[in-house]
Length: 462
Image 1 (cartoon, one colour):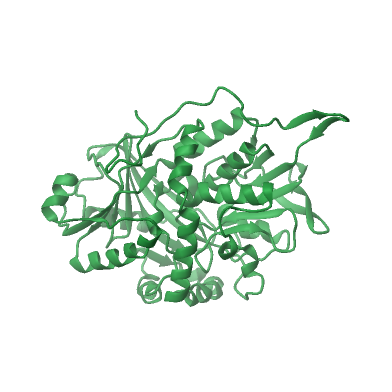
Image 2 (image 1 turned 90 degrees about the vertical axis):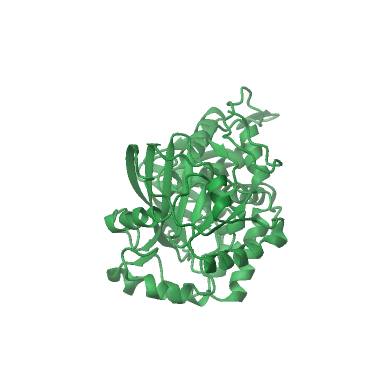
């Protein structure tokens, strides 16, 4: 396989590169005039895509890093998402029009958005805060901030591959597929908002052009828009490649470690308390996705986080071979073709932190995809999955120093943009932790923005 050239009009193929043979960073200990000098130790809580990428960037800068996870590295939401690298979708989840749409959908188990009725009393304060952000002013401010953070995303992915992290990456753009002509105008309006951030006008394809461009689309599709700059990865390979790189480069990733407390000393976290003992730390980074709110509360930091459950259906050895990832607009389903697999991802369920798989949500994906891609389910085997996306009420990630602390940091709340924003988030937080500053304005993502808000606390795990 060859590495995609991001400068080409229509690059193809996947990128897999070899592990580096030399350790090119400073070692974790050095010998000085007075004997061994221990370098600063950073403990990262969370080994999903954000935590692993942060560990990678910190290790590149010479930090001693230990990563803890209650499960396995790369499991959870990082394992089963669509794998899209899509700066064109930089807009936050709370957007103009979402209130009306969500009210129509929220109690229908087969809709793109479902709120479990039993969870409504606990979710109500968070939902009210979320709905308050569904206005043009907040949306466009959030879009501009996220787009600025996203600016180096493609270059950072190229650098990740060049550094020897092995993963499957494709550079075939994203195809926005529409059944109704009215939907096309809505998509064009959304994409126009990111044109000021370096995106060209998307290519518009009519019904005949669509079939030539993507023969697998056999449903009654009217129009499609192709955004050529975008890419996608198979997320399992990204997290696995990061875990291998970290192990080869002196980073310890510990699985099955449950954090039960954060030992405070003045304005610092002195240690991370686990069921197996306390781990001393010079810096602590919480990057635990939907569980980050509960972890932050151990330090008295308010982080209004909810879990937005997403689902996927993955067909191994599919009969249908697609050349491009696509977003099925009316059904709100992301289609990701991988090497030897086809994944349909979608739906948003708010029901607290749990991994219950609702078969009605899976059925909604099947039915929605059938409208565009009849026969997509045929293949060698199939798997269903559910995972939890970390959502904040303003739709923006949380990146920065925790209020009231010198050495506690947060990198979480990326909703559906974890893979997209992961490398840029990691570079920014590593710069802040190692050099005292980031190369991008992190003010919109400051954890302190929630300190004075009276929103609901995290829904208890059950």
